[in-house]
Length: 231
Image (cartoon, rainbow, N blue to C red; front, side, top):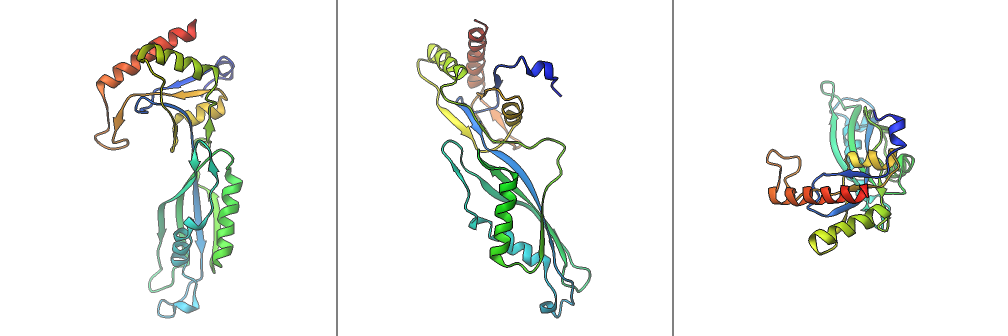
């Protein structure tokens, strides 16, 4: 972990994740939600006597698109994605339990309590017969919270100045849809976090790559930007 005495000296953070040579000034955050459905066991030949937890949970995740999500001017909207769903019956029985994991990307202004509230509200609208337990999926790392850096921030203005001097134009600005170390650095250190990296494709794939010429341009920029910071 970074020592507190080092955090006091941090003024700006630079992250060289691939951004296609655009300047990223913010990103959505993320929660992983665990849903547990508890139904009622019965003979599978008489399913009406039980409550099928798998079917109930399937109804629920199939209706996630009905939730109205907050829109942010820079980060867009949050999103839901079902990552995993599992359940099974004990012999010829109606399954009485099932579990699902959801990815919930959030924007500035959304938090965990709000996510629980919207999921609970959907449960009530659907009139589920099963009991649904909503919890954070246990993770060894802190929550990845969303963040935005002001476009007129001193370090952003300096970035533009150096970029124009090197390349004769101003950099395009973008905002991330997913999460990374930059979320931790921006929200837990509480300092401007600028993400700028080379052109690349196929992220998280076996043939992920970045362009060599682009990498050289990014390196050249960072050298000059660090010199400007030192001045």
